[in-house]
Image (cartoon, rainbow, N blue to C red; front, top):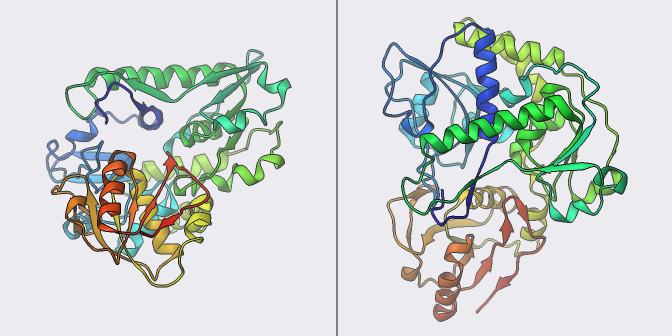
Length: 416
């Protein structure tokens, strides 16, 4: 989390939490909320913890890294998303202890499967929210966090009556912990609940680029249009049921979609979670769950980034990265698929740190004097310092420019 007064957190995590709590209530199971940053410090051998949502082993600029259930007798992973290819060996053993792991998307499934962990795809728990009751008050169009470039393509008949909302919770403080305080978390939870209630009671159509709006709409039975300039692997499960319109498909959008029947799948998934909690799931049940979502190739989700990388040399090259952030993980994974002959041999940031990324310790960019290795500058924070250093040392570099997951369509190799 950035402490510069301009940070915003996605309330999608709390939407997913609300869905899990609804399920536990239906199962008549008592529970206690544990803050994500306290998982490692809490628990005992007699306790069980249910873990889902976004996680990463890479200690990034704005987040304090993953918390593992070291003290818990049992950990249930269901709707679990893991970013990044780096998984410490001792943590792999902990995953294996608690397998099978219920992965939210195909990327997480692929990463854990390659490590020998038994896993399957559950999708997001927010898709399991109870279907709403149809009423006459459901006549509002909501537009939630779509690209600015997409607003102009929405028909005026829809746009003029639409209500614009956002999934962002602003963090205006400039000091204190780098994770959300209990008060901020409670406010985000209430905002998420309010937004879900508003959609449930009033929406006749939702247009969004947010996974954690599309997913609850699928569960609630709300017609939804999902559009972005490009999609990433977080969506590599929901596209089995909802069309994903990236920029090249915008002219094919169906502006009057019907809600997608999902009751049979919801029942299967809900029963699976209950049997997992009760410790009585079967291999046949897990195979059936896997068939609900698992069907796409990971590399389909980085079209814009793929176009950029494909303009760079096909020959074998050595490269380094400068700047560690969430999308750095995405970039390195995309390179490994599109240019597997390239070799990552160093990781830099402005200052040296104890952070380990892709198995390498982060060093200061000022110590890089290798002008035979291409430097990919992957964060805004490190950009000016890195460019100046590369120019002074005659190091070839590429600026990876993006806004969240919407990558530019070309990357230019600047050879000094």
